[in-house]
Amino acid sequence: MIIKRFSSVDELYAQAVATIVEAKQNGATTFGLATGGTMEPLYAKICKTDIDFSDCTSFNLDEYVGLEATHEQSYAYYMNKHLFHQKPFQASYLPNGLAADPLEEAARYEALLQQHSLDFQLLGIGQNGHIGFNEPGTPFDSLTHLVTLEESTRQANARFFSSIDEVPTHAYTMGIQSIMRAKCILLIAVGETKRDVLQRVLALDYTEDVPASALSKHPNVIILTDLQEEENK
Ligand code: GLP
Image 1 (cartoon, rainbow, N blue to C red):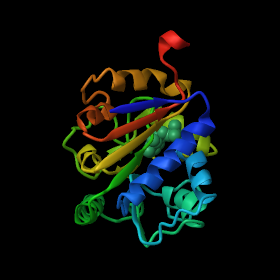
Image 2: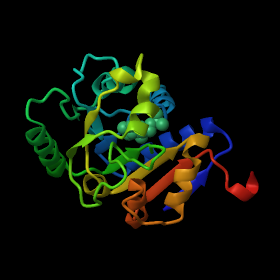
Image 3: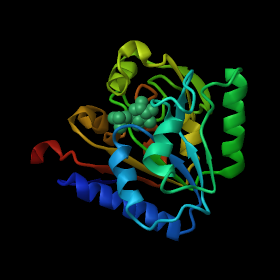
Image 4: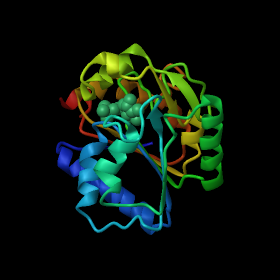
C-alpha cells in the first residue's frame, strides 16, 4: 500500500484527480465509483477538468434498499448530481434499490461486474472500517450482497437525511472480493473521524473486524489522506 499524506485537502483531491487521469492514460476503462461526503470535492474537481469518460463504464459500490433513483439520498441520484450530469460514462451501473428479489439483484449485479472487470476502484472508508457497505465481520471472500446496516453507519449517514428514521436499514454492496478484483484501488480518508480506523488499516492488521484491512493484501492500493502521522501532530 502506498500512503500519501497532505496538509492541504485541495492538494489531496488534485492528487486524486491526477491518479484517475493516469489510470485512464494507462488504459483503464472500467471504474468502480464511491459515494459519501469524501467523494463530493473529488467529483466537483473532476467536473472542472476535461476528463472524458464517454468511452468508459462505471459501477457503483453500493445502493440503499428502498430508495428510488429519483430519491435525493439514493446513490443513483447522488451520482447524477455530482458527476454523471457533467461527466457521462458510456454505461453506468448501480444496484437497483427497488429490486423485488434481493438475492436475484445481488447476483445480477455481481455477474455484470464479473463480465466487465474493474480497472480502477475508488473507495472511501467508514468510521468502523467499512468499504462500500461491507460492515465489520463481512467475509473477505464476499461477493455483491444485501446487508443490514450497522446502527453506527446509519447514524453516520443520518446527516444526509432529515432524520435517522429515514435512513434505510438495508443496502446492496459489492463484496470485499468484488472490490479486491479491481486492478488498482484508490482510497481516500479525510478528517479526524477516520484517524483510528486508518491507523488500523495501516498497521496491516488483517482482520474481518476491519473490512478495509483486506486491502493490505492487494498489490496496487494508494491511500490519500489529510491525516498526519501521530508524532508529527
Ligand atoms: C457510506 C458509503 C461508503 C463511504 C462511507 C464514508 O456509508 N456507503 O461507500 O465510503 O460511507 O462516507 P463519508 O465519505 O461520507 O465519510
